[in-house]
Length: 451
Length: 91
Image (cartoon, rainbow over all chains, first blue to last red):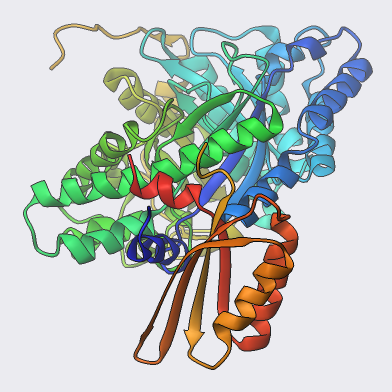
């Protein structure tokens, strides 16, 4: 029988330490919606999504109520649209249908306006990448991603160049809202097929018909546990405390995932063991790193602290869930983490340090605002750098940069809500134009002689 | 599963007369059986935890009535299915 102090501890974690389920994401295959006629494809996509996800939001709300834990987002991911729209050649029609279906089902984002081009691009992939500025500026809830590299295939530098240009065009197309369209595009290396988190979620080609993936959260819970149980203690104890806490958080994620899957009659996919921050006070990954003894996130020691955190979260969570997947690790999106925002505003956290941190954390250079006059080639080169880290280290990396038009270092962009705000970070003023102009492919790396 | 119909009701707030009576009356109205109850007052803060059997109750209706009672008495009253506590604290 559960005792009173355990019950009160759970309630305290939810109420005071902001433990929540970050997202229940329903992955839906759209293969059956391919059609040579664009209008028919759009109807099929809309019907397929609205039928399959009809009860998603309602079920999520019922679970929140019955288990007393917030489920912040209910979302949908679909088969990469470049595959589905290849037959008709009009990916934008799919974007419109996805947006309408998202509105109808009540989800706040739908991911999968995507192309997987790590080895090369089909005509459909190119059309999708070309359409990104229009797709992301004319729809409200559609999220896009492009996988430009993998450990097995190397880096597709032509796709990297196109993505750099697309980011600039999206920024221009959404300049009235400080390039908010750029928040909805993630450029990946080693993208995972079952990621429940936006903007990079898509329902991979190897997935089944439909599944439920759950993303957990809880940086606040980890930080408070460290304050309580490992104040000034050696790192062994820090790691143990994080593991124990991650176990508890993940068990809740597993419970909700199982329950959602049963009620919706859809197979359970994975639990994503992630620490996803929000801009709210007490919900910051940077503050966990600072709790370990760093004066401010970004100072020397930050990479080591993040490596420990990331690894301990996985070790603690893995036994708590039947299937672990997705991105699983600590997220470091600058604008969505109050500790990162403050560190950047103080000048303590720079893009170079963030790049180093991405070698040991869950994803990559995420939600970073850069000057509006940053050239497309520089953005492409940053994508290439990040893809190289992912490719060599066999991990997922990603880039979500926001070159806010008219903004320069010292300014700030405000996105609102979970997206937060971001001080503009400086990037190298020196040119990578000729580097990016080469195109072609960077070959896949050796899997031996790993030094 | 053994715990499938169980929920945990927690009541937190300033101690006043009639809290247990009021909460019990709501539970009775919804035919929810109290399986276990523990209650303490720490520095004037009333803390009560009840384990209840919901096999004859409609969760959402009971939750609404408990919320209403909590608002009227100035207390925080929560009801949560017991699996969340089992999941977190038991392997």
